Image (cartoon, rainbow, N blue to C red; front, side, top):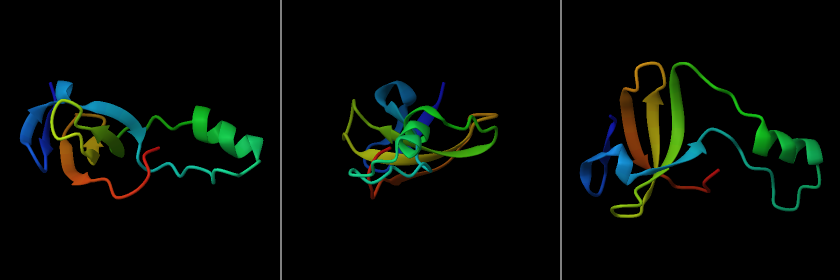
Length: 88
């Protein structure tokens, strides 16, 4: 079971959070007409083994959006920070 250290609420079980995807993916501009770019953004994602940045929302707590840096091999959480941009 993962324990996520929420900057507002302290350590919490991962069940209080909602995973929201890869935090390293850049969303195309809203008015971008390039079908291939949108297709890759929505459907084509890497499945990394190792350190990965992810969006999580603390839905059962402060409701803040967070960026969690996690090792996908052993599930060690390296850092948790507030999200300062658009969620993927």
